[in-house]
Length: 233
Ligand SMILES: Cc1cc2nc3c(=O)[nH]c(=O)nc-3n(C[C@H](O)[C@H](O)[C@H](O)COP(=O)(O)O)c2cc1C
Image (cartoon, rainbow, N blue to C red; front, side, top):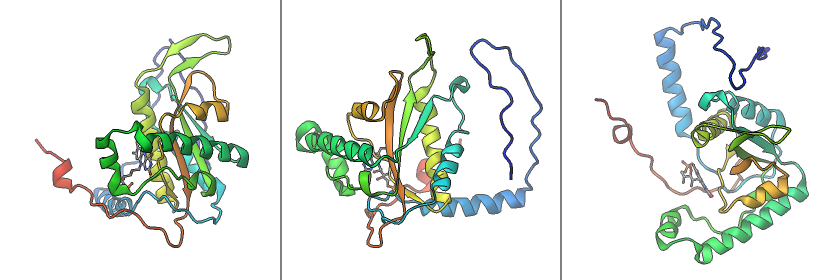
């Protein structure tokens, strides 16, 4: 299947240029069946923190990133960069720096309230997945546009846009049979340095990807029911 390439993308100040959009309408019965199946499949997604060393097909990861990059974004500014980190030394450096930040956090930087919120997840400062998961994606948000000559332009709704893109990335990975973890070491400044990202980019999340280890466990969590999250007025 070939995916149509984008012919044109607006840049700052371009005029509105409408083109027809006529997607085929899905019959309601098919929509219902797909929605029910998707709901059930998505409910099986879990955050994995213990990964198998088995390699993953790299193209699946690239396709999932391509899915994420179809996300809607404020003013279509697409304020994201996904770095697929393959260099083992870069991964070692990320792990060292992340574990150091996490150690400081767990040993006193986090409030009692924050530590209590984390306790049911069983997490600590040891992050083997940063070096051991077969794939590692670091997501950056472009806080503003940075031209080659150094000029800057504001980006709008960056947090929302990148959050939506990461949600789509996680869904694509899960529906393609891979497991992932959203890891947010705090602070994350070291990631820009290790990965050589430009000044307009700020790390958003580190996402190890792979298959769950044979002895993988996850916290026994219950999701809110639909009644609790959906209010129909
Ligand atoms: C924004 C965000 C940040 C997160 N940061 C971390 C993290 O730093 N370390 C970690 O182990 N899990 C992290 N998680 C994973 C959550 O703990 C996990 O999604 C939650 O406990 C629900 O579990 P589930 O994903 O299996 O449904 C994060 C999730 C999100 C959405």
